[in-house]
Length: 317
Image 1 (tube, rainbow, N blue to C red):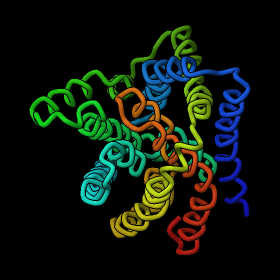
Image 2 (tube, one colour):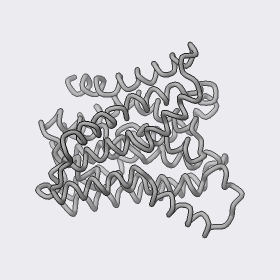
Image 3 (cartoon, rainbow, N blue to C red):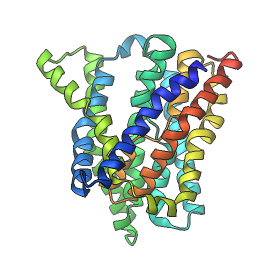
């Protein structure tokens, strides 16, 4: 019951902030321009600031575990390319593939990871290492699939052009750059002046609430209902199938306790809000992305609780 209450306390407020954004749109307090501007601000400033703080303030040297970081990276890579391959084969509406793939494999690792592990173990534990092994790849692979599957390039068969565009988008992706800079700061021991740190914290504090309100304000219920099947399928992959595949392998490799909990967050937490922001900014299906975020956020309180109960029952955490 404690885990259910914690999961509900972690996910229901997120869901309710989305509902608030939707309500404010219905009473004409928020409009399309707000959604567009908020997404741009989050993508270019607030989310990068949040990730920079998560990484730069973590004690990476003392907690470094190469095998663990590699497992996170390999699991993410296998999940991404498997989902993309299956989507290319099975999905008839090619315009939704980019958003479907991104929503199916990309978790709220940075936002929920630290909170969950701190609640269970009192420290952030392995969350920073999981973020290092996973979040950069989340963004690199998202840029890759969103560039190749973007609606504006459906008729473009020039693979070389798509690869070039992907590399350019990866190189200038502010989220990836913030993680790299944060890692440099953490490993070098460089600290920012107090006034700069407070400024970055203020900007980072905008990331989650602004993204959720913009997502709710941009949510289109009728269009979402038209895409209910891919929404349910993507949510099933995100919350159930990926952890069911990779958690047993993690246990076989000897990862337990906070390492396993961090992996569970990596695999089974709801789809991150930034997937909607990137889909919208890169000419992909924002409606599907937002639908999966809403559904996985609502259901994750119960699925994450179920996974934690199962792992505890098996003595793994």
